[in-house]
Length: 147
Image (tube, rainbow, N blue to C red; front, top):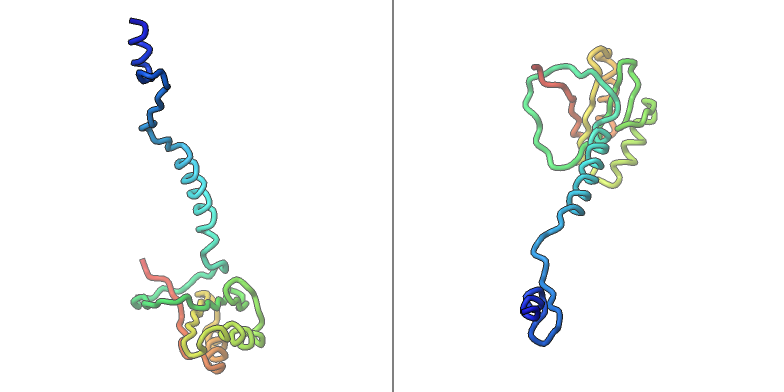
C-alpha cells in the first residue's frame, strides 16, 4: 500500500522521479519591467515639449497636416530669439538655420515661428523676413486655439 502512494506522488513504475511542467506563468518580472517603463515615459514626456514658454495668441485656423518635424523659432516676451531651446542673436539666425538645413532640402524645410502675444509685431516680422530672405519658403506662424 505504501508503494502505491509513493508512485502516485511522482515516481513511475521503475522508480524514476517524474517532473511535471509548471502550468503557471510568473508575471512578477513582467510587471516590474512595465512599471519601470511607465516611470521612464512619465519622466521623459514633459521634456519632449518645446522648452521656451511663450504666451501664444489665439486663432481659429485649421491645423496643418505634415509628415516631418519642423524647426521651431520662438520669440519670448522680451524679444529674445530661440531655435528650439537655444537662444541666439538675430545676426546668427540665418547662418544657424542654413547649417541645420544642410542635412535637409532647403526648400522642403518647414519653420514654425512662435511669437509671444505681448511682443511687438515688428519684431516677429523682422525674424520672418530674415528667415524668408535666406531662402526658406515654408515659414508659418504658430497660435493657440481659442477655448
